Length: 143
Image (tube, rainbow, N blue to C red; front, side, top):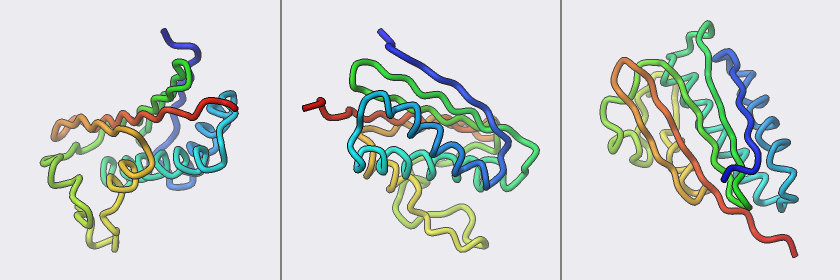
């Protein structure tokens, strides 16, 4: 049973990446997280939102990124959705150092970063229809 939930939408502008980070950090603050937990979730959200803007929408700032966050006990789920170009080969896209935009000098570490800082990362995508990233993290018990 979900204890709390939030949903926001914002334009696919690079400056909204920091807004998404702050929004998720504020929302999970009700769990009294450690600084490391806050930093981890902010980093993962930053990577997911940046991927939506740079790769999903290819920099088209007129599009919308959707983000949902839910809390169930001490478990947090963050979902980031774009309706952009989609990912042709998800397994290839998840490989460290792979980037679909080498022209922008991207590092290709977005999915690796998400997987490092979250307990699980699921990627759903259809070419031409967008991408949905579902990230989960269990927060430590309050002592």
